[in-house]
Length: 380
Ligand code: GAF
Image (cartoon, rainbow, N blue to C red; front, top):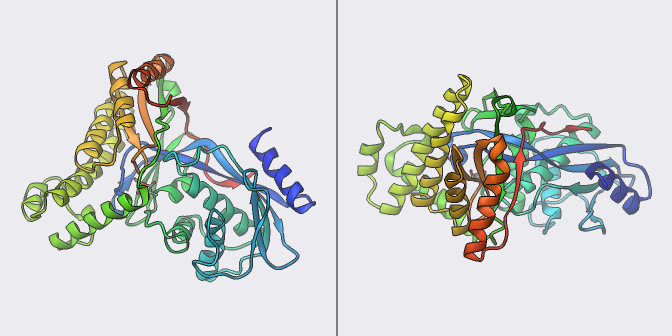
């Protein structure tokens, strides 16, 4: 069954009536620019064809209810404040709360969710859920919420209601990405440029390799990285590490007396520059040349930001050994997915090389597929 049909079926089963409509929001792959978002820096994601679909309709009881193909019994709530709804329902209650908190009259609604965005794989399944629900509620209520404002509302749901200190990358990708484009986002100003990203025309492909590595201590580690970056910025007397250029990096590093903080800062400053360099190359159609930037980004995440695990390092090394132009982990880290830029005709051979490397190490088998840039959140 397709994902939209599954969402409709779940809605009918839970509420014994037809939904008013279907709204979809995608997961994402971040091409480059990792952990730069909460440092007011630059990111370059594209939307995956995998998406979360919300079947939704008005609720006669004046409440909000949500169920999913994985959790068919609806979670139901009225007006709430952070902490009232926990578990996966918090992402939905958080969106209702954040919209209300931003001054909007949120329509009571019944919602059923279906998704093929892999969960917990660093492909933004939470943001896809928030963005699908937000888009549905905005449309159902006829709310005048500009597209540019929506990611920050969904992010507040996650930061304040769910309690995860994440940046603006994932919600921006899910809401603002366009088909066939990568989204160059300035996380300070929220300005975007849609960069043409049609690799098929170049005979290239992005192979996504889900390491299937078990996530470990993700929340604590993420928050720690963020604190370290903020402390480095405070020591340097800048609003955010975005304000340190690669030219001034050596002097900045001399002023940080903690080695861990120095390495965290170096990752952010060099990663911002790699995003800018990647964008310049893509603008002039030199796609293959972004490969070394992707690989340098991975090395920086591995050695300076220390957010990779063996499985993702092995996937990157095996992809490069199989001839990839570049490869890197994508997403928050501590497991998740790797992307490799390859000749389209080499995609299967690269995936097979990673499989073989995993077998040698007795790792759980990876899952690989070629990703193309899909559309952002919309009504179906
Ligand atoms: C996670 C977060 F949710 C994003 O905000 C971003 O920081 C990313 O990790 C790392 O780039 O996906």
